Length: 152
Image (cartoon, rainbow, N blue to C red; front, side, top):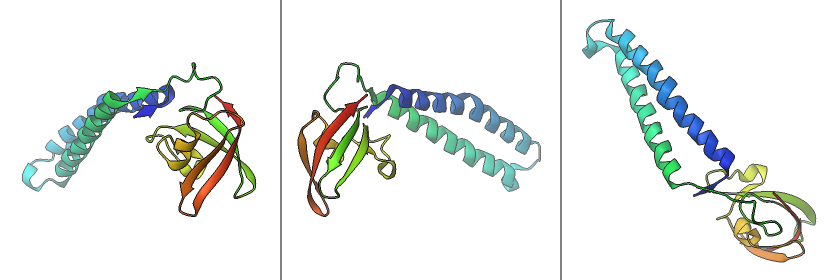
């Protein structure tokens, strides 16, 4: 999966936080729960062990994600839309200008016009240049966009 360098850093910080702080916090909770006595009927101990399992699962998931991410190199792209680009378009069907930020699927947020390069609009925009007219399929049918501006 492709991501920005900034997003990769966020994932790395989140992983570090889980490994250092969350692990230490849960170890302390388990230690305190053990002090309450009989572990077979100790709800605090059970809750702490469940939280520990959740944290370890998050750590594994983040480690696997970080192994598979590819950082977007937008410095060499200049005038072609690709991952990391903000593309201003004119939407013929809605008669309006819209800006889309193209990122990888992990960072997509369609409600805020941050689209995945794997989405129909993202696929249509990637590789386009200012002045191009691109088409994509939506549930409403084929849509038409004109590329007005590309920035990184």
